[in-house]
Length: 441
Image 1: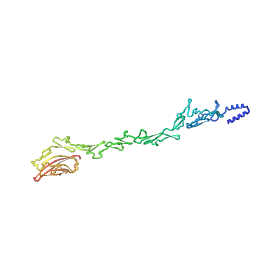
Image 2: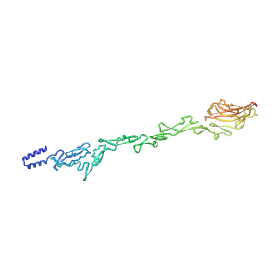
Image 3: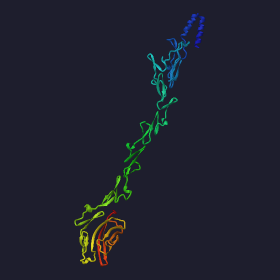
Image 4: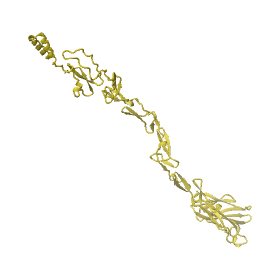
């Protein structure tokens, strides 16, 4: 429209003036012409100059887009885009001379910048001239750059998505996926090996397993065990003492004493331990621990001892040896009494099973044609004993009823000898002191 108006004006003037005047007026008017959109008149160069909208317009491009100045306008392109400028035209019709070079690129190709007289690569990553996503890593290359995903991520579309390494079973036991990575975990009783993937057994016994006494390592676990005399508690770690004495009344012959991890047997006074369980009578007469006086004889019995006088013969008997008394036939009072009395001592245990043979009587003098009988002359008031004759010269004293000691019996056993051919009758006695011990051992 502007050009048409000027032409009309020039034509009108040519009618009134000479040709040279019209031409001169036309040139004068052309000096004040306007430029097309995107250009502005440069008075100094008398040309239309391209306007750099990337500078004159505040925030011409939004988001990750970058502004590129262009002839008569500007472009909003991704930061990774490359723009190749076309050769400058030799002239530009009435709008004026061609615009100057794009100031955004200078005289070097895109991706380069002027340095002295040469072009050097622009590091878009450092200068933040890239359009990589926040999840991506910018990698500078010659003349440009690339957006890559970190290790452990894969690119899906424009985003970097974490790779689930656990899908590929990298771990022996358990795999835990992590952002950009993964970690391996082991079952209890195992630990991750040096390759961070395999699992090896843990020796809990060397690592302070809570076993109170003994620890045994197993594959993936451990076991607690106890010393002899202890048993494992419900928690599987603590060892509790076993009360062996409560298991049976036969653990010890006399008394059981429980101790930590073991037990011991105790014997009563007058006994000593035989082995670990049994009690044996102490012979005080042999060990010299008795207190018998001079003129007395020490007789050992179960659980103690008994002191007897050397001379126990009573009238009308006369002592002829340490344990034998004789009643002389010349004494009238001896006619109805046994000719001799022999002293014997014995000790038996308490609560013996009955009937029980406890003492054998044996005749020391045998006369041809004599017939011998045996009986209990005195001392068996309650019938605890009886005589069982074995043959003509011997008999057995039998315990008929169980006896609980301590008790002492003095039995007078008599052997009567009869010789019918000679009308001869005589007897001898055995005075037997029976000591019943207080225990069944």
